[in-house]
Length: 367
Image (tube, rainbow, N blue to C red; front, top):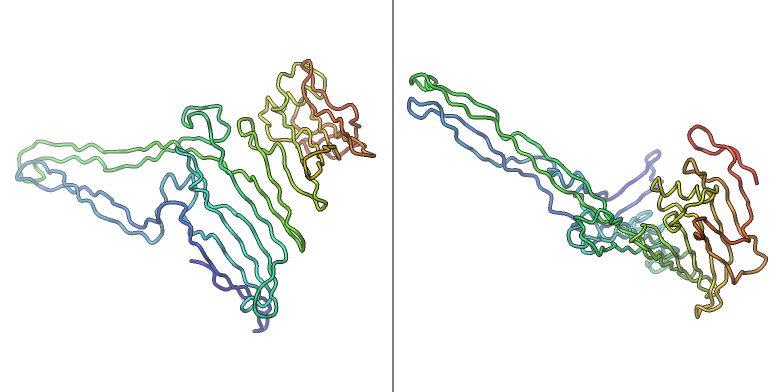
């Protein structure tokens, strides 16, 4: 069932009308099932002997789709479409919004499941004379499904999958005891034990990561390309885009796992080591922004922020930035030297998160 029209009315007058159009039916899973084969056991006399068991299978039909164990983990099998258009006003007189979706099922590597349709973009259009539409603004997303050099089913260190076990358990029949006397015969009994069954399914999913973002708003389209190191973390290590002057803008991120071999006990080093021990992987420690000329030359730093964390709990402790009167060409990214975390000497303390409440929510800071 799909919405065709939504109308808001006040005193019998329509004040808001939306109409919908659906294109490109996407089948992301198996077809919907409304029937299921069931077994019923009947017991009948066989002469003067104890009753014998007869299996009577039949097909049961349900009013709602049947959900399997796999679907309870991977989601429903609702109807999905690649494009849904929302028209504002009768026949879109006030414009329209177009929503796009992409089906990543074909991108899933062998042995992996659980990737379904995801939003691929939104476009806003206005109605123009002549009956057509003109784009006002829009945004889009592209995705990748990370692969693996190891075995999906045995590589315990593979960060690109989520694995668990699903258990389905049910009773096939109840216990039944019968005697020859039930059929007019001599004493003597026969017992049919109850039967149960269970199914164990290893449920494995592969994440879908955004690797392209586009955006436009009454002007040229801006594209961002996100680069990952999926062997270490499922967060971008750099983001590339082009600014309005044609310069290449590069955002670079450093995360706790990018600081291996910490042995020092100073506050900054201990704070990052604590994040690693608590498996806080995708919280940025350092974010730096660079500009390059259109030919990738003249790389210079235009901003950088470094966040220190408390050594006892995973909350920010101090925030540093580099005050820039002019671009910097000799920036030193944060790293580990001699077992201690090192950062560029031009960082200045900007914010000190001095106090947190019992829920680790800060309520006092000093600059």
